[in-house]
Amino acid sequence: MGNKQYHEHELTEDWARARDASIHYGELRNHRKSTKKNDRRVSLWVACDFMDMGVMSAETIQDTDWLELVERYRAGQTRSGNPLTEGSIRKRKEALVQMLKAMKLNETLAFVQMWKEKKEVKEIRYWNLEETEAMHHHALDLAQDPKTLKLATLHFLHYHIAPRRKDSSMFKWEYIDLDEGIIQFSADKNAKRCFSFIEPRFIHVFKNFKRMLEDEGHDTTYLFPESIAGHSGTTKEILPHISDKTVYEWLIKVRNGAAPYHKGGIRKYSSHSYRHTLAMRFLNSGSTYEDVSRILGDTVATIEEHYSELVMTPSFRKAWEAAHVRATMNTTDGTAQPEWLDRFRKVRTPNHHKPLVPHSRGTDFKWGADVPEFEPRKVRTTWVQTHKSSSSYTSSKKKLLPQCRHSISRSGSIFGSFLRYSLSPRG
Image (cartoon, rainbow, N blue to C red; front, side):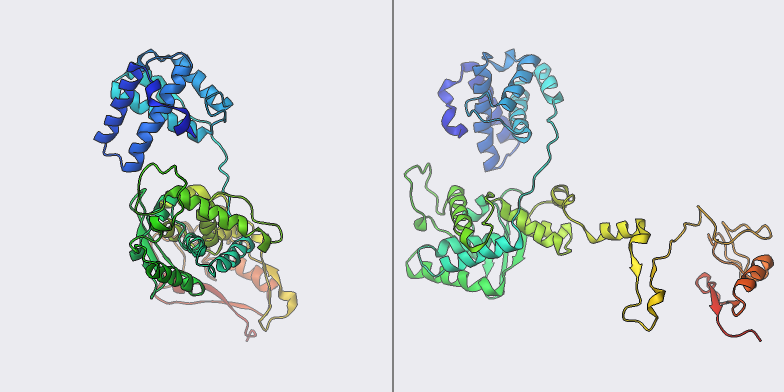
């Protein structure tokens, strides 16, 4: 962990001054609590990494120093020894940019801001339906024991609404309506309202857990009060609820314990995969990005960015079928038509590409139709044709269909001017 490998007392006076200026800059921008925490620790990491390279102040950073640090991050040549992803490097760049802005080092700021991270393929990891059901079976078994009931409750909370770990740690009972089976709360990250229902088969787990807390005298303000968590001796601050680290550990226990319930085991994904699993379950069932956004508390743009390449949406399916007309067969199943009438969908030719009816006597088919007693204005109708405007076309048609004759509706609307066939015998 970076917190254990970087220490404030290592900083030179210049880097300490730059870091303090960056923290104050974040306060002026009204950063929320979690962002202020990042302002303090990430700026410390960046300052120490530069010092390890021999750069002892922000004022002496050269463009070559910054590029060298980026390559060190990619190669894992820092104190952690692990290569950083492009996203992690971007966060360190943002911390450096904030320091440079606070110190008004505009020349250095210019070349740091020019740097762009490499595009990476985002891997969305989620559990399939069989794995999820196996985790449910294990969680229901855990719910039978008062000592592990808290693990089952946490699992089903993440199954239904998948809050972020921090939101889970400070989740309150007032966010859950057990009578109506509804969960709703505001996400700490962006204050967006999250909403979901609880499956009736799992409501008893929440009820039993709340009853157990009341019987044992625990505070029922929070879903998981601090008094039910085991203490490791490394707690840095006293909280009225469990920590996000405890949330992570409990969810991993549920995941690992569910392995015997599934033939192939449960893939060892992180607890964040609960959010991906929930999103994919909704999208694969035909839900919209707006529906998923309402549950997870992310913006619609974020949901679309993460999952649009993984889901075959109904609109995309419709567009694909329109572009591949020979891929869809119109069958006579369930109709009175004979089987030999099975056919591919008709190809609809756009009017501006190829007219379906030829010109006969100079009528401008782009802007009007030659229909007796009816003169529409500026209507694109290449598909309307009458006897008077095309006698040659009618004659050829009669040769092909001797038992058919043309008729046209004379209603007062353009929508009544469709050409139809009457199969009555010629008289």
